[in-house]
Every structure is written in structure tokens, then in C-alpha cells.
Image (cartoon, rainbow, N blue to C red; front, side):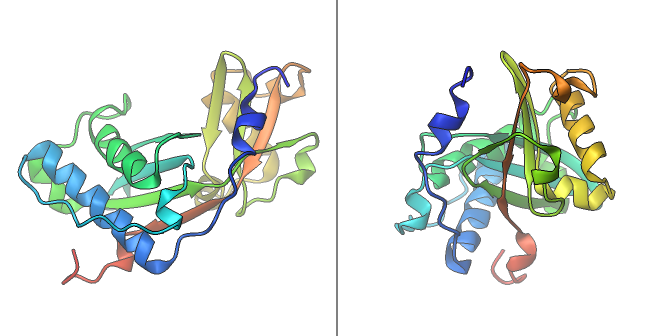
Length: 202
């Protein structure tokens, strides 16, 4: 494979995170945001579990009410998940080019969502894509575009629309997936947000 992306991802096996690990990452992401905007916030004590030592891709998505406020992530990562989440939380708040940086007064209204990505799987046919289960990566080196599984579900897209929009995300024509030098990969994601946390735990 020309890009080498599939080979890199398949060395990792995805172990779903348990509830304790999910809550820890959400608290860590929140502390990272606060520290970025107002240094001095204490981080939660380290939680050393096998699930959190995984080196997987992950995205942090910020919402303000029903509106997207920022989303960034790594498709792959060589860092343990807590380190990836700390970096991506701050990056989502400060470097998503679609939005101005999140300000301190906004912070109480920001809700955090985390998506931990499974290894990628190359596909040859569009009917291998399962809406609601799969995210999608379109790659024509040096460009690539990714949409998370929940995007198609939330927007009511069918398979064809999902593929076309992912091509657009990569900066390619909507029908670029038909070209021989364009590769398609699917992945699943474990998605969780701050609804997991009670008001007393935040």
C-alpha cells in the first residue's frame, strides 16, 4: 500500500475502555482546558490501567449547546491515550481553524466529547461501510480526510453522501473515491461525553 497507513494501524489492537477509564479521560480533558485558559488547575491523579496505555488515535470534540465549537484529533498516535487527550483537548479549543479560540467565560458552557478510534481497515467496496458503526478515512497522499462515525448518524446521511462528504473533507472532488489512487479506510470509535459524569463529579 502506497501510504503505509494501514500497516501502521494494524499493529495495534483496540481494547474498549471501561467506565472508569472513560470518566478519567473526560476529567483529564476538562482539566486540560481549564489549565490552558487559567493555569493552576489540578489534574486528576494518574490512572494506570491497560486500557489507558493503548496508543490509539483519538478525537476531542467541543460543543456549546447544540453547536460544534471545535474538533481535532490524531488518526494514529504513539502516545498513551491520556497524553493524546490532553493535547487534543487544548488543540480543539485553540487551533481548530473553523472557530475562534474558546474563551474562559465560555468554558462552563462547553461540553466535551471523546472518540477513541479503532485500527483502520482498508475497504474495496462502498457496501462495506456500515452507517452508525463506521467512521471513514479517504486518502490520496499527501491529502486525507476523516469523518467520525457519529457524523453520518447525526446528519442523517446515507452511505453515498457519507463517502462524498469525506472526499470533500480531504479537499478532493466528491467522486474521487472512484479513482485508483484513492484509498478508503473504515474504523469504529468508542464515543463518550460528559453526560457520563454527574454534576458533583465535574
